[in-house]
Image (cartoon, rainbow, N blue to C red; front, side):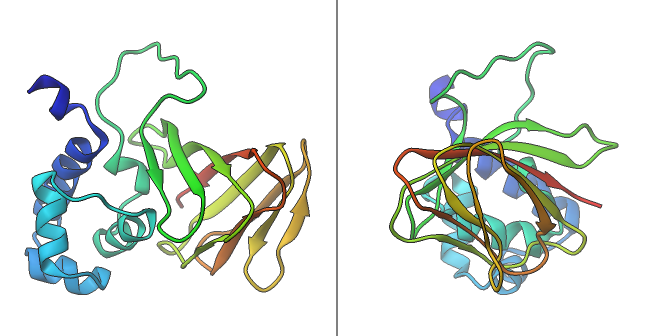
Length: 186
């Protein structure tokens, strides 16, 4: 039972219930705002759903909250996350995975992710909540990154910053592409 409580689904379920209650919204209201079925939200809140990255972002926008609140359980003051470990959420239409590495403290809203992606279908992101800025530092491989209408090709060591509240994309051009993503909430 303790193992189930530490799964990403269980952490997300608890966070969704907590944030929906904090916002004083019903299941129906949040589902409508996020553009998902009420039954889908109910499954996610019960820990039985398997959410896509797109669904989770839509819920964050609907609840006006940073993405990291879904995956950031209490943790010790020293934390090491080895490559290949940590809470991972996958996109539904591309080989793209986001692993939360660190969330900003309560007085700061900055989250750090490791992004892994494979060539094929790029990750097309809808706008996040207003004021979000994304920073990407390419570590390995090549990718088209940035605003959907003007992505930039990045190579290892390249950095880009762009408004995350506009449509944006991350499209791997080589196998085993990975980068660090910082999402900043203002």
